[in-house]
Image 1: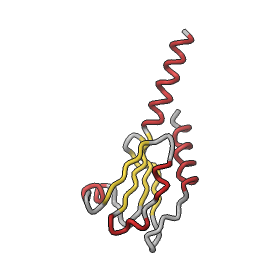
Image 2 (image 1 turned 60 degrees about the horizontal axis):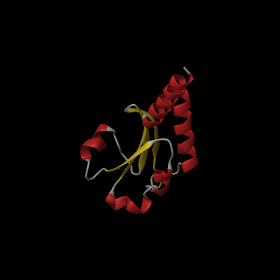
Image 3 (image 1 turned 60 degrees about the vertical axis):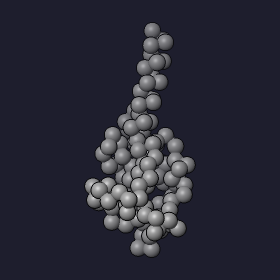
Image 4 (image 1 turned 30 degrees about the vertical axis):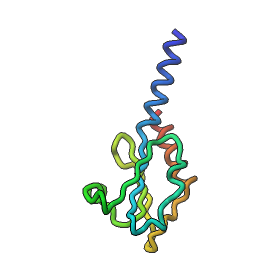
Length: 108
């Protein structure tokens, strides 16, 4: 019984983590303002999208400024961080990581 409970706990933990996805939208022409720390985020899947190469994703997610970071849970947008008028991201790694952890805990 304990072994089954342990296996179920691991399964639910893994599935909770894999449900969170962070998408970093940017463009080659804005490479200087890329959010370098996005690859260091934990407990989530990370994808990078060049809006020039993927205009359908830009339109689908209504990306109007780059860089933009969107946190998804099961494909649904939960939180969006956008650059300011100078195309610079003001959100910090700590702020985004804290939101990821909050989402995981709320859905555990």
